[in-house]
Each structure stands twice: as structure tokens, then as C-alpha cells.
Image (cartoon, rainbow, N blue to C red; front, side, top):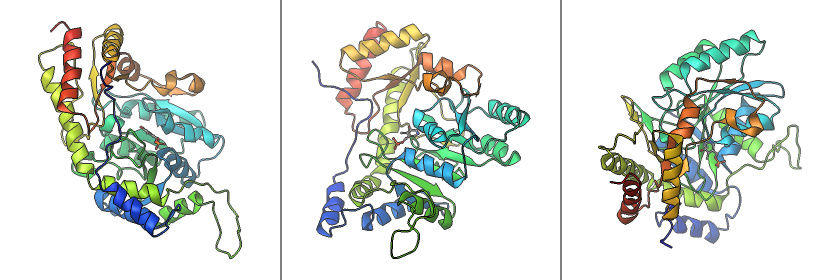
Length: 374
Ligand SMILES: *Cc1c(COP(=O)(O)O)cnc(C)c1O
């Protein structure tokens, strides 16, 4: 068996261990400490736009707290991009609220402005104004930030920007993670940088950040004894993991460059092959190309190609199965145009790690060319 080529695997810079050692040496082995503060500061400096960052245990926790900050309660409705990972939608259900799924457009594969407006108008007519819009920059490609923002403003609905896959992406040089009223990041093992597991909430005001940290540390009121007037959570990031994050921040831009070069490599290699298409960056858009995705002509070809890669011990994966197609969300209202279903049928994510070697890329290439008889 040839060695496994992964879709996206952790990639350390070498600096992580010195931050971890510092944490041990100073005994900050806790969900607070200098690495947590330092990591938050590093992300704030990177994102710009005067944002505040709360480091948390996961991106899912960040979404959960974002919904709580927006006062989402049982019985409320929250709009969510259908084409995404289930973690975008699950926290809506944690709160007893209902997700309302909205389909994608073809230029970024993210939430479709027309469907979004139809959904809002229809929900209002049915008696409930949605409490929030969760928009996702899938695979690092920013959603249509201007159009989505203007619809959100028109109906006065806040945006939660799910930037879990898009740290390092920009629109007209503004970083993803700074477009939402609240934004979230993920540092899971397969993301563009990792803390093994972790996430962050990005806020516009210090007050919101402080509120998130308060909720994330068991909602302890200011008193010498343990006093609680709110339900809290244990969602803070550990100082050890934040040390990994500090090391990872030093090479974030190199990771982005490498992932973009993977995408360019595949695009150049299949330029002549009309059976494979790629998602282009719209004018002013810069994608971190977290995963390199291709579209095939049919579902059969996509599945045959996936199996051909698997036989060579190369991991590839269909694009996210839309939430409106998931058994667990079968009763949720959805506003559909067929785009995300088509993408799910014909799309395939190829190995995209920032640690992918030239030899590995060529193995992927050869396997795909063999499949097409090239
Ligand atoms: C990974 C991911 C999340 C969840 O982040 P975790 O840190 O794994 O909890 C949320 N949304 C999207 C789009 C993701 O890809």
C-alpha cells in the first residue's frame, strides 16, 4: 500500500513547542494565561478593523455563544446557509430555535442573496422575523459580502459570519472574520491553522467579548464565593492549546500561500480537460483555498474518480452535503434553487494540505489523468 495522502492535515511551524514549554515552565496549565491573551492579540492584529477576539474551545462553541449574545431563544428562527458543515446549524438547535436553510449561488457557492430575501419575506409573512443570518465562507471563498450585508441591514437582522474555513481570505483587502456583526473562527485539526481543537468569537465591541468570556467561564458573578445569576458554559481555550495557536499564527500567511499554490497546481494541470471545472475568484476576492475543489460532469464520474483515488490511498471527499438534505434537519423550512444539490452531486475536494509535497501532488495528478485516460 502506498503512503496515505490526506485531504488536509495539521502542519506545525516548529515554534509551537516553545510556547507550550513556556506554559509548563510558568505553570499556566489552565484555561487562561499569557498564551490565551497573546493568541487573542495575534488574531486581533491579523484581522484588523478594531475587532476583539475571545479564544474558545471550538468554533461550534463560538457559534453557540454568538447566538446567545444575539438573544436567540426557544421558538425563534435563525437563517443558515444550507451548504455548510453541520456545526454551522447545530447550535441553533441547542437553543431550541429552528434553522431555516437557504440555498447557494454559483459564483461563490455560498448563501444566495435572492433566496435569502425570499426566505426573510416569507418568514415575516408567516409571523416570525428571523433572529440572525448565519453566512459561511465555504472552502475559504468569501460569500457575497456586499449583497448579504445590504439585505441584513434592510431587514435589520444581524449576521453571524462563519469564518471557520476562511482565516486568511479577504474581500478588497478586508479580512474574513470582520464582515459579520459577530464572526467565528475554528482551529480544528483540519483547518488552515490548528490548535488541535479550538475556536474564537470575533466581536466589534469589548463589551461583547467580555460577555462571551463571562459565559465561556461558567458565568461567575463578581463575588468572593461562587455566585451565578446566569447559566454558564465551559468554553474557554486552554493556555496550552493557545500556545500552539501562537506558533501557528507565525506561519498563517505561508499556509495560505501554499494552499493557493495547490489550487493553482490542479487548475494548471487540468486546464485542457473540459470535464473538470474550478471555482474562480470574483473581482476583489481572495480565497485562502482551504480545500481545492473540482466539479465533474456527473455524479457517476465524481464517484468513480473518488474511488479511483481511494484505491491509490488518496483521500478525497464530496463537497458538503447540504443541511436541507440531512435526515436530522428534514423538518426544517428551506428555500432552494437546486444549486447546492448540484454541487453536492458533482463536486470533489482534493488533497489540499499546506504540508502536501510535490511528489504527493503528482501522485494525485497521475491518478486523475489515468482515470480520464490521459
Ligand atoms: C469546522 C467548521 C465549524 C466548526 O468548528 P469546530 O472548531 O470544529 O467546532 C463550523 N463551521 C464550518 C463551516 C466549519 O468548517
